[in-house]
Image (cartoon, rainbow, N blue to C red; front, side, top):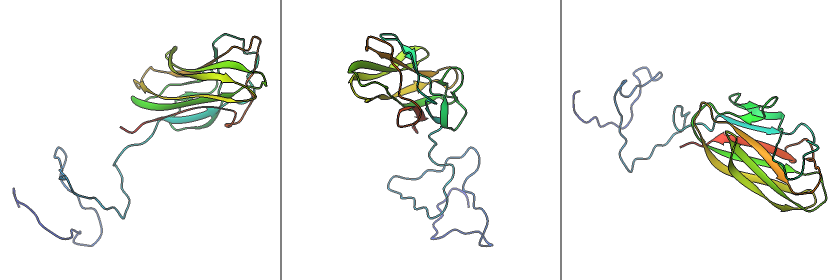
Length: 188
């Protein structure tokens, strides 16, 4: 049939199983407004994925963090890393290989009962991108969340911390409840 309208109730293969193909390469299939898709099977090729994604925690306490100095936090234990974009051994940085917008979270607990100010910073290519912190006491969790864009080739992200204790301090230790750096790509 050429240039017409096909009206049917059900389309199946002649054998009752196999593949039915709509259109061919280079064509567009248009679904008009108001149409509802109902899927009782498996849908593939729709939407997107939230990858690359990673989550990492500290492998132990990070000690001797000098007061009033920006110090890179070392999240050395990967919980997961979908695309091998996080470096847990050398740079402690996330370098996403897919361009897009990413949701980031970083948090840390200090091993101290003193009251002092803490600033947490997720840096993009060495410059401040997302900032968090405040005045904390008694093992409080300081964190920062936000969305940043990556170019998919050279942008990288790291976590830095600065405290105002007046003397050296250390993070609490290993475990995702004590410190975490993670990100995932947002589906657009």
